[in-house]
Image 1 (cartoon, rainbow, N blue to C red):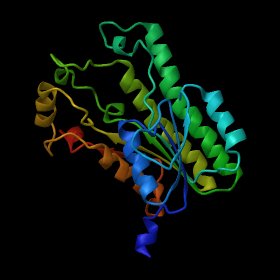
Image 2 (cartoon, rainbow, N blue to C red):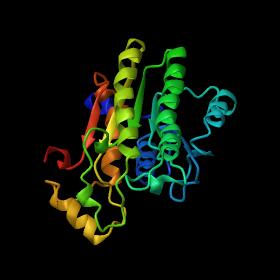
Image 3 (cartoon, rainbow, N blue to C red):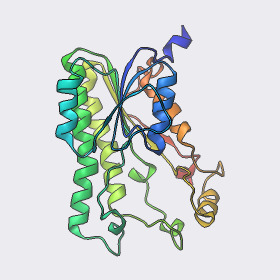
Image 4 (cartoon, helix red, strand yellow):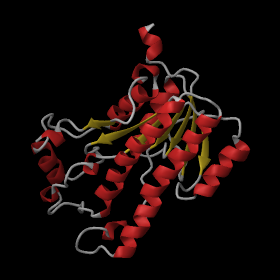
Length: 252
């Protein structure tokens, strides 16, 4: 009985950005645990075979809608996960020294607005078909926590004015959508990881570890485990929550 609560076997799953650093870990875990998975990403998977994929720029909202109105019109998801990280060519110029209003505007449009709108599209699809569902949005601890800019000094990473705005918007949109869609038995939650290890420099890694009680960065699969929990029936009474996975970074 308990085992069934943690199962996603035969559940229909849509994963946006399912071939990225975090997305590929989520895709692999959901597929291996019996989910019927469709991935939408701008690049093709190199590691996972047997999953239906659509190559599409996440910012092309009309194309994504058409996929599920025409090619996959009978595919109504039980679980929708958005782990995309869309950004413009100006992304590196969104730090405090170089940012311009246009950079701010374009990146909010492509990232925050797409997360909110796509979540609404698929929540409405679940609602129309009377499907109990789970919407999972990938946010960040910087959506509720001030950036520690000392981490980035003399490293390959820049602080960003726009990133916390986007991630904070995602977290708050989750609360709002959870309040509305709960009446239709659709849950909406977010996951806020801390830093995900991705071949960072030794200097940045040293600085980050000093600030983290568990003394390491997060692994992509640890975010995937959280997504699996929020997607399965074991979390059936959890909605409007932001699940923090940061090794204790945000408590110091």
